[in-house]
Amino acid sequence: MAQGFDPTAATNAYLATLSPEAHAKATAYTQGGHWVLLGAAIVSVLVSWIVIRTGVLVKVRGGVEAKRPHPWLAVFAVVAVDSILEGLLSIPWDAYAHWWREKSYGMTSRAFGGWLSEHFLSMAVGTVQALIVFALFYWVVRRLPKTWWIWSAAGVIVVILGFFILNLFFVEPLFNTYKPAPPGQVRDTVVAMAKQVGVPSDKVLIYDGSKQSNRYTANAGGFLGLGRIAMSDVMFKKDADLAEVKGVVGHEMGHYVHGHVPLTAVVFGLMALIGFFLVDRLFPLAARLLGAHGVTGLADPAGLPVVSVIFTVLSLLATPLTNTYSRWQEADADHFSVVHFNEPDGLAKALVKTIEYRADSPSGIEEFIFYDHPSVRARVQAMMDWKAAHPKPDAVSDGPAPAPAAAPTVAPTEAPR
Image (tube, rainbow, N blue to C red; front, side, top):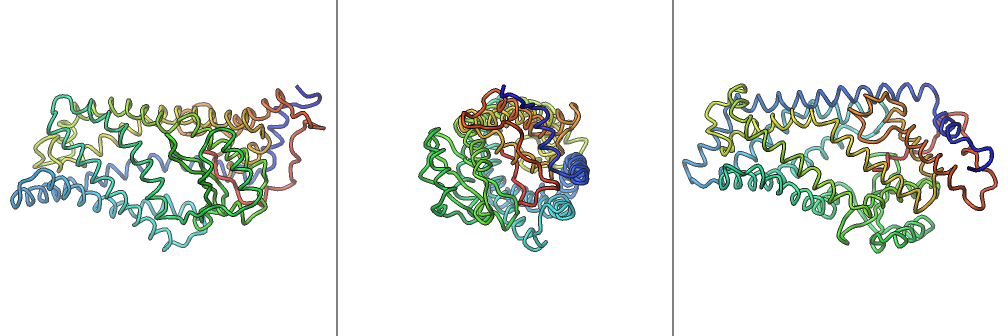
């Protein structure tokens, strides 16, 4: 350990760069988000129940079968109607949770019209994806009524990987414009980093992330050689700290190099195996409790909202497990960044700015249940511990970065994902 350097004191110094008022606001925002998670589940169940009680999906399925009895057509019609109805019924909640609340806490400056237009675009994309997923789902249920839940779980892995690539190259460009990053120090640094760790360096892109947020962020996505490095244009509009850039981009590269995307697909496929098994057993009971009159069984697409309710409840109950897995991934990516690029202070500075929307020091139970990233305090402490154990050869002083008297005025950095 470098003489005179205290990792815990350095961690406290970093956290002190935000004022007590900023910490209090972050805690209110974070803890309010826990209630938003519960509220979203309740709204989802309520919306599905409303659709069930109207009987509209039974009528749509019956109408299609009466005119042209083909199961694929019935599934497409029912899924399309259900996606549109549930999407429209959910708009008031979505506007509150994803626009009004964000705006009230200063997390976005977008006008409601801009948010709403993108929300409708998201609904359209989601409807197309739902048509693909549930067409395959109901085909498997019809063909393999006894073991459908096993084969469907395997299908989840394929769907996650397929949609990841489709979203990367076709869906994300619907919301933002991606173009080659301009020549300069930031681009040269990122290209050199990519070559160092084997991430494709021929696709270094910049996108207009500033239209959604003032946070500067980056991501490196893909697998099996398919991927790209994308940086928000905010990085180029402000005086980017190269140490932060290296820390954050190195984190994203960690996700790529360590194969977190395919690993996540496998993990969620295993979780889906349990979920589908429970759906198979619980569907008749849930259909009766929800009053799904006219639904003939699990293979009937008119029962889609019943499946949705079961999965919503199961997903809520599984939140601590999924968050635990996510926290492990994020910690692993942090470690990759600091091992390969040795910018503990850069990553620490970026992490501290995320306190604006993720309180830094939750209780153990709060972090276990609700946090999909490790606490900022834990992550910064890990960086400072690394710094103490691996001082840079040219370091004159290993003390923490100077703390400004007030909260930083630069754009907050989005949490490394």
